[in-house]
Length: 216
Ligand code: DX5
Ligand code: ZN
Image (tube, rainbow, N blue to C red; front, top):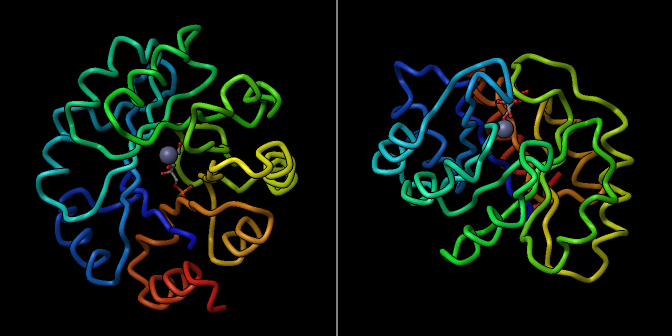
């Protein structure tokens, strides 16, 4: 089954709880939370304490996307949030294996994120330990960007590289309903959607939900 993951960076923060409750009632299971440090990416958002509070308030699982420099210094507090899925940028540290091992040792799903400028082949040494690959389809940390078309080919490339392994492909940035369909067709099974989903358009919510089961 495919999953659509609402990205709360695009939510109305003053109404975060009610917005998440609506999505939960619609059947969305996993919330994507962007952690940004103002260094690896220009914005600052959602530190571990806030994520921990979000986790207590919402009924959904959390997918934490760590956009921080030196993630090895923050991984313990991110694990402490209780997030079920945690991904770390390949570009953010020379200690990526350490961070992934920490995530796995705590029984969580571990992902490696690659920026648009990072070649997919760097994932090869990690194929036996990761649970998912997050392919950025925009430059990380900036909202309202346009989906990079070449991402579709990168998803196809990854699909071949992954082969029969139990690794999911996630895509994040600038995705709407038609792009989500193309990503799923290319091999992605986790699709992050921010502004298109939090636009208060009920049709968007329903249509995206139906993509999870391949109903459209
Ligand atoms: C951007 C974040 C995304 C972002 C997606 O760096 O990683 O999760 O919130 O939002 P949209 O779908 O609006 O591009
Ligand atoms: Zn993200």
